[in-house]
Amino acid sequence: MKRIQYHQYGGPEVMKLEDFEFRAPSKGEVAVKVKFAAINPIDWKVRNGALKMVTRKKFPRALGSDFSGIVTATGAGVTRFKVGDVVFGSAQIRDGGAFAEAVIAPEGFLAKKPDSVSFEDAACLGTPGVTAWNGLVDKAGLKGPKLVFINGCTGAVGASAVQLARMLGAAVSGSCGAEQMPRADCMGVAHVYDYRTTDLSKIEERFDVVYDTVGTMTVATGLGLLRKGGVFLDIDPTPLKFIRAIFNKKLKPIICTARADILDGLAQAAGAGHLSLPVAEVVPLKEAIPLVTALEKGRKLNGKGVVSMS
Image 1 (cartoon, helix red, strand yellow):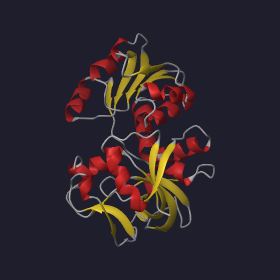
Image 2: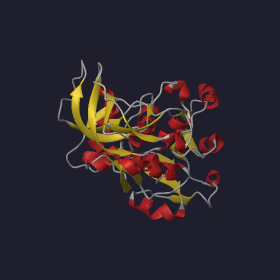
Image 3: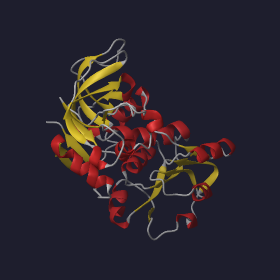
Image 4: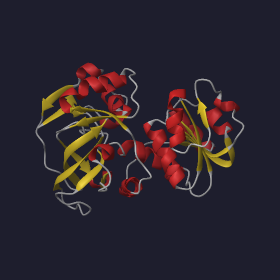
């Protein structure tokens, strides 16, 4: 079998498409024949070594997190899936491996793919959807007619947050580039601000939840946009922010943390038509390294980059 892997932390040059020996799933794990994998910024952050405290120094390491596919084997104790199930979800950060013909993932990092959702679309849901859920549901406890502001409302996490917030009954405002404003309007964002021309700290409206999904908003700005009792969700967690959050309960740093109930919730939302992310470009596995490299270097897509294994 083939996958994209690397033998040391570093830039795009360390990525190689190589043969690998696919192991059997261990207790609580599921083996999946990958159909499609979606590209996320976390993929190159891991490869660059930004998370080496978690990923350690065992090589070769496999690239990629989010995928869709078909279950080929299950480890001991797995009860939610059986061979032949069609699924989507994420590999663990410490293991990676989505950009491959097959991958191993924990049972709790997967959900059954709804029949109405394509393999391509399902592959895109994992990391963005889980991150949006971690913030809005886990940290903010969002429900009912609240006011929510999403900084970066048309990015993958931002668009997921917009759709989930609206599904939960909230009214959503947000920021994005001028070229993405029509898309924000189509998603139902009530008030859209061009981040290039608007000083977000000067917005007069106040919100129950402010979610910075791109890591560009200062804590002062985020907190300043809150109503009484509101919370600021920060996708760029740093040690200093975690310390600050101990003393200021309005600040909630977010770390993407998958769970079975979240993946099942995303599946239900996607199956009902409440959650989807646009696919902008699909390439075969042999062409994935150039696309990952281009995105890492700043190329913009009007949607997700996806890798096909067929």
